[in-house]
Each structure stands twice: as structure tokens, then as C-alpha cells.
Image 1 (tube, one colour):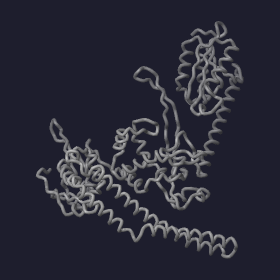
Image 2 (image 1 turned 60 degrees about the vertical axis):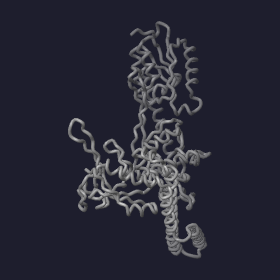
Image 3 (image 1 turned 135 degrees about the vertical axis):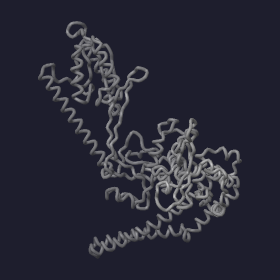
Image 4 (image 1 turned 90 degrees about the horizontal axis):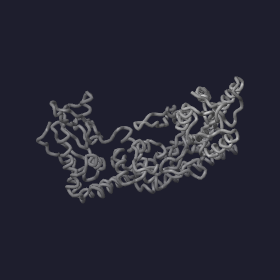
Length: 570
């Protein structure tokens, strides 16, 4: 390969790189680097062949579009020198810098920087290598100090702010904790309600949001199911009582919390993430660059809890949504179909276990699939159930829907049943719940005042520390009792509110629909209605179906009605 070094015109390639993190800092822009390199090249009499930049590229990898271009230009020949502002612009790994230097030398090209400390002698190379290693050591120390600083900040109960807060929150003025974004949080609440209460699947939410034209946190129209599932499992949206948060944080952090409030939990240090960049040849023949992240979970003992404001999502919604997703209590799609009565709706009348689903293909060239429900207990070969029959889905499901759609076509009957159930739930509360909650709250305030008085008495020497400890233990037992009673009242209220929401949803969306519109509902929509009705269908060995619900008069009606056996049985 011909070289122009020392004979022909000196030709230079100017190379500048800035990582994503560096872009956020002032004084190190690509434009400033290129300007400094131009001045140097002009002063040294270099002819500039090309100016190559790598915006937003890390120096931890050589897989960069700009660096690939530089290497290709050097291989093509006629390049005397590649100029960069600093040696770490080529790479932040000394081994990579050495590799580039040797590669360029094979084509008669040298690497130069504006802060070169050595020359081409062995001593000069040794000096450059020492400085490279020292710079790497300094970067490692800086990274470790940064890591420890973030850990300390989280241990002090402060959020380590990232590029964007969790959906539904905003950063406060100090960017060390959250403030609820009421508009966004309404959408998060809707996710929990749709999954936990209305029985939507994750994919069903995705389709509903996209159909309504709702935008993602990134401003896109297409929602990702992992994001929706991640919201449901994220403790930042789950309301925790003070008693639940206190063991997770330091004493100093717990002291700053209000015992009467609830908090979400933002976890720090949950996983270790390492990034690498790879280059691949695409179908268009061009080289494409992809950043790859490797996630490794850390032990739970290393997680750090940071309390954040209560997002305002009822605990019952969160628990129900998690049960529906984490425990896979969702509409089954075994055999490529939606099973309307899965998820605990259809049960064996003999043992009470839920029915499992199975698909069997017929013999022959057509291979037509047949779908069946079968007792899960009998299928698992657990003793205690004699129901060994299979039940065809295309027989059972239409019979149940025929009964339920009849209820929906009688709004007055449905409304009366729902109202009766709500009334019974409300009557089930002991006395006046508001007055009772107020009394317990006053009891808690009185307990806190006594605790403070006893501590003052101990400080003044009026009682010894043994007596103080005994009194504080008794007060703590009282506090625990108060919190249990308040939690029970709140749970009962949430259950009542859930029933009222189910009532509104059923009446507003489905009750009174014309038969044609009801029959047009897809299986997943029917399954959702069954969940709202708290439906339970017992299937006996003689293929009789007894439908029951948990919504007032409907339950009484359903328990006394048995659907007739279909002539088409398996």
C-alpha cells in the first residue's frame, strides 16, 4: 500500500466523538472538537480529506459508524494521519487504542491527538501507554464514586433521577423525588382497573388504547405489552402503609414519613446493566449498529427502597391486577382460541376445582380441532373427584352466554340485583363506618401523644427506661390494633366501591344492548362480562350447568335455575 508520509502531500482525517452522557455536558461538543482539529491541521500543513464524527457513541466499543468509516478510509490508502482531540476519543479502552494504532501503521498512517505526550520511540509509546492506563484508572475511580454517591442518595430516601420519571409521575423541583402527574396517572389507574376489575388481558388494553388513539409515554401510538405488564408489577404504583414501608428504609427516612399516609416504593439497585454495541449487516447490504443491554438481577438484600407519593390507585385494584397477570389468571388461549369460561369461572360440581382446557385434533386429513373443558383435579390424578368426563366448549359456552345475555337484556332486573348486593355489603359494615374510622383515628392520635409524654417523662427521670420500654410496648400493641381496624374498614370500603364500579360498567356498557349487538361480542368481551358479574358456573357429571353469581338477586335466581342439558354432548 503506497504511503504519502514524508513524501507527498500530508493528508489528514479529523475524527471527533462524543457519548450520550457527554452531550449533556457543556464544553465538549463535536463542533468544538472539529474546530480545534481544523486549526491544528492548518497550522501543521495538513490537507483535510474528511471530517468524521460519532455523535452519541460510547468509547467502550469500536463498533461505531464513524470509526468504521475512518478505518475504511485508512485501508483505502492515501491517509497520512488521523487526528483527534484526545486519545480517549479513539477509545476509552487502552487495548482498543493500541489495536487501532497498529492497524493504521500497516497502511502508513499515524494516530495523533492534540494532547500527545510521547513520540514514536519505545519510550514515547511506553509513556502513552502509562497515561492511557492512568486515565482508565481515573475513570474507574470516578465511576465508583458516582455509584457510591447514588447508593448514598437512595439510602437517604431520595430518587436517583434518570432520563424520564415513571409514567404518571413528575420530578419535584430538586429532582430527588416524585410528584403525581394527575393526568398521566389517570391512565395508569385505568390499566389497573381494566386488568384487575374488568378482566382485560394485557393485549386487550394495548388494543383498546391504540383504538382510542392514546399516546405512549414516548408519544407513540403503538403500546408495548411489556410496558403495561411492567406497570402492574411495579411497586411505585402500589400503595404501602407506613407499617409496610418502615422496615424497608432507614430510621432517619422512616422518621420523615407520615404514619397516616400511604406510599409507593421506588426501588434502586435492583439489577446490574452492562451495555455493548454490535454491528450487523442488514438485508439492504448496509451496516447497522445496535446497542445491546445485558441485565443481571441483584440479590433482594441489595435493593434500596425509596418512598414516593401515593399514586392514588386502590390497593384492591393493584392486588387483583397482579393476581390476574402474575398468577396467570387470565382468559386462556389454549389451542389458539379464547376460552370464555377459563380463569376459575367454570368449575367442577363434584369437587369445586376449576376446569382446565384442552384441544384435541381429529384423525384424518382435515385434522379439525375439538375443544374441551375437563376437571383439573381429576386430570391431575388427585383423589376425591369422580368427574372424569370431558365437556365440549362449543356446547357449554353458548348455553352460559344464552343465560347471561338474557340478564343483560333485562336492565331493570340486572340493576335491581346489583343494587341489592351493594345494599347488603353496605349493611354489613358495623355501625357507621365513617364514625368508626374517626374514632379509631382519634385513638391513634391519643396513642401517639401518650408515646411522646412517656418519652418526655423518661428524659426528665420521672420513670426509668425499663418502665418506658414496657409502656411503649403496650402502646405499640394498641397502634397495631388501630391500624388493623382502619385497614379492615378501608378494605371493606374498597370492596364496596368495586361493586359500585362493576354496577356502573355493566349498566353503561352492556345492559340493554340489542340481542344482535350482544351476540356480536367476541369471546374475550364475554369473559370480561363474566368477571364483572363474579360469575361461577358449576358443571356436573350429567352435564348439567348451574350458574351462580355474587351480585344480589342475580345470585338467588341463578342458584335456583339449572340450564337444561344440551342434546349435543361429547
